[in-house]
Structures are given as structure tokens and as C-alpha cells.
Length: 197
Image (cartoon, rainbow, N blue to C red; front, side):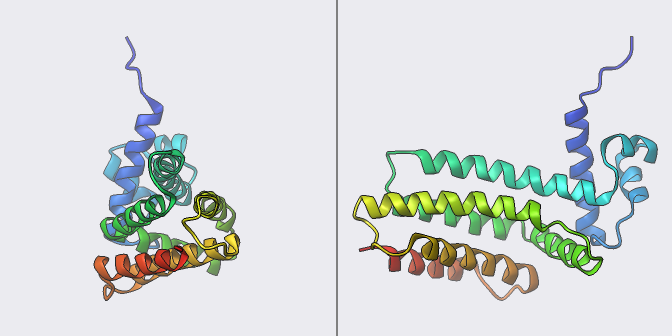
């Protein structure tokens, strides 16, 4: 009787092993042959799941961000938590993720630089993910204004401030190790405090 293969599980396993190689070797230096060897499969089998290493990395980023966004959306919909607490909880989690997955941030930055230098496009996919978090922040801020917890400021500008601060943290952590978790938490709490009445 032939062995039944769970293709989604196999795809995730390949992704996890590929990420380990990307972290060890760097995105640019990783070859599909390295990934196939690590997975103990032939390159032809690897091609059944992914067309190239970009596809593997994009799948990893999508998997990673999708799981976070589900958690954040669920938290954003809770009615037993005030809007300012929701913002704090989401942002603190993002900071924690940034610190625990720092190597993934560095890989993402390396990947984006390589894609940009080759004239390829990946920004559209990342923009969709950024738009989702922007919408969530906008809705939470709007709720905070309606509940008279936040100042009646321009919601898109408030959202831009939050997102740009988070992007700043991501870039800093990708490039340097000077920034601490505690410093970033203090900075983001100060930003949220500026929104409060």
C-alpha cells in the first residue's frame, strides 16, 4: 500500500528546514541543492512544492505573518479589553516577536534588498500585510475615540505614526543590536500615551 503524504505538512517541513539554512548561510548564499540535501529529498521533489528559493521564503513570511494577523484580529475584536490596552498588547507582542525572531527580520531585509537590486517586485505582498495591520490599528483607534479614551486626532495620521514606529523597530533590529526590548516598549508606550485623553 502506498504511503500517504500530507503535502501541506511536507511543505511546512521544507520551509522550516530551508529557514534554518537561510539563517545559517544567508539568503543570497543558500542554494536549492542545499535545501534539498537538508530535507533529504531530490531537487525534483523540491520543485513539486516550490519553484525556487524565493517561493520558499515568501511562503515562510506568509505563514509567519498570517498566524500573527489571526491572533491580532481576534484580540482586536474582543470587547472586554479597552482600545488602548488592545494597542499595547498587539504592539508589545510585535516587539517580542521582533526580538525572538530577529534572524528572520535580518533575512527579510536581505531578501528585500536582493529583490529590489534585481528589479523584481515583492512589495505588493508585503503591502497587503501592512494594510491589514493598518486597518486593525485604525479600527482600534476609532473605537478609542468613540469611547472618549483617545484624543479626536486624524486617524490615518495616528495609524501612520504607530506603523512607522514599528517599521523603525524592525529595521533597527535587523541592522543593529543596540536597541533593547525595554527601550522599544517604553518608546511605544509613550506613543500610545500621546493618543490618550
